[in-house]
Amino acid sequence: MKKIYTRPASMKDAHFHYCPGCGHGIINRLITEVIDEMGLRGKAICVAPAGCGMLVYNYFDIDTLESAHGRGAAVATGIKRVRPDNLVFSYQGDGDLAAIGTAEGFHAANRGELITVIFVNNGVYGMTGGQMAPTTLRQQVTTTTPSGRNPVSAGHPVRVCEVFSVLDGTSYLERVAVNSPSGIRKTKKAIAKAFEHQLNRTGFSLVEILSPCPTSWKMSPIEAFRWIDDVMVKQFPLGVIKEIKC
Amino acid sequence: MKRLMSGNAALGEAAILSGCTCYFGYPITPQNELTEYMAKRMPEAGGVFIQSESEIAAINMVLGASVAGARAMTSSSSPGISLKQEGISYLAADELPAVIVNMVRGGPGMGNISPAQSDYLQATRGGGHGDYRTIVLAPSSVQELADIVPVAFDLADAYRNPVIILGDGMLGQMMEPVDFSNIKKIKDYPKDYILTGADNRPSRMVRSLLFDTKEEEEHNWKLYRKFQRIENSEVRFETFLIDDAEIVVVAYGIAARIAKGAIKRLRQDNIRAGLLRPITLWPFPSKKIKEIAKYITDFFVFEMSTGQMIDDVRLALEGKGHISFYGRPGGVIPTPIELARIVSRHYFQTQKVRKQ
Ligand SMILES: Cc1ncc(C[n+]2csc(CCOP(=O)(O)OP(=O)(O)O)c2C)c(N)n1
Ligand code: SF4
Ligand SMILES: [Mg+2]
Image 1 (tube, rainbow over the protein chains, first blue to last red):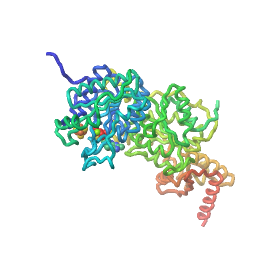
Image 2: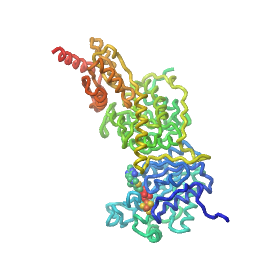
Image 3: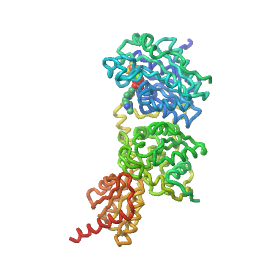
Image 4: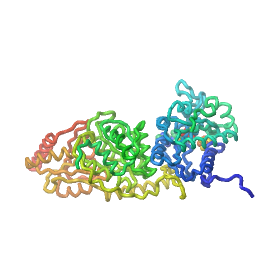
């Protein structure tokens, strides 16, 4: 019998701790599929965040370091400068990259560090219980915006790809979503493309992935998947935001 | 051959000779000469130099370089060292080697850019969150600064722990002749924990998150046992004229240098003073102090702060002996004459008391 679907070699035989319907598990799997298909298991080094993606080292069967909250891009910079021939990527949430780690992400991008950031945008702080993130939509209810995010006092949702796109060090920025089979296929392609940019030394690459967090959004998985299409993409339009030929 | 160099530049050269291949820094006075020296020398030596966006970024780049297997260093002065504490805590938790230089300036807050010793407690008590210690080395001349850099890197690698070189603005900025020929061939430390890509070997992970409290407790005890080993074998100090002394001045770093000048003057006045200079501030030479206390009871602590190391002297003495203190905080540099005057007044007062 022909095996047509199996666990990627770069993925450990472990149970995900993610909630049902969470996007992290899909993204974890896609990353390891790409690493396998590009033959990068022996080269890849991952920097894990503080956030629901923290435990990726329990799932990725590649060398992984867990960084302090938000410092992933700086840590990845240190690793990559020592090991320029490795594939170095950080895995970061929206709180991690766009709030506490803004400076580290922004300046790694601006220096054109040859690293890739896998940026999981779920519009909330999943790990700490669903508080407001920099990417939380206007009027969106979270545990720290109980009557909805009021931009007058709490600011506006940050478009990370667009902000980074004006930095000359960036070479590939794409926003995708893992809420549909076609979106999942596009996400996989985008991750592969970002890794290519890194390996070709073109510049800093980042894939922003709109990812459902049914638990914090207080929705069923199906509702959460729909909400991305119906509401989230209006603030965070999908597509390639920047691409320099590599 | 000796070269005339500032302490900061000498430190940079010594680091490169000690096999440091990565330096990350953010400008702050009084340590800019080191960052500038590395900006020029690191690329010449084939290493990595980044002027980071902040001290937080710099220490995390150090962490990344260290986990990738390199000898990495960062430097700053007091306010910047506060920002590095997060990263230092992670380095200790992850058991990663690194060398961190603090050219201390007057504080708290922005303070000023003059030499001070006000970061002693921060340096010797861990500094960041959690149950950990850093090895703290306090040289007192430009030559000793250069000599201690390879020691710092070796200790960091041997114990897989961050090491702090605690200087001050004066040590960093003054120029003295320095000889680098003491720096021998770099020792090789096998590093089976570094991340290189899981090529034909099982994957590795480096982390500090241990949800299981039993695991976290065991990790803490493991670190503790390491710190005990360091306390047992890595204490360094210098003594000066203590064999016949009636009073022992305890001072470190540049203050110890001032104290030596003062002691020479006191000796001319037939006051038998001596010096104990801790070189490792952690681990602290407590045993040596206890030993001295068997035959000398008069201890005089001198610091360029309101008194921080004095706590360690007190702990070492366990109530024995008598401790006096003279401190000049805020970036003020006291002179040997000034200190000699203070010690001599103290000496005659205690003599009077003894006679009564
Ligand atoms: C310095 C510091 N501050 C706060 C925290 C607590 N913390 C852990 S994860 C997190 C937010 C994670 O949100 P995000 O990056 O969006 O990731 P998600 O869990 O949503 O995937 C916070 C605030 C921490 N670990 N460290
Ligand atoms: S809280 Fe949200 S992001 Fe975290 S595991 Fe659950 S669904 Fe996923
Ligand atoms: Mg999030």
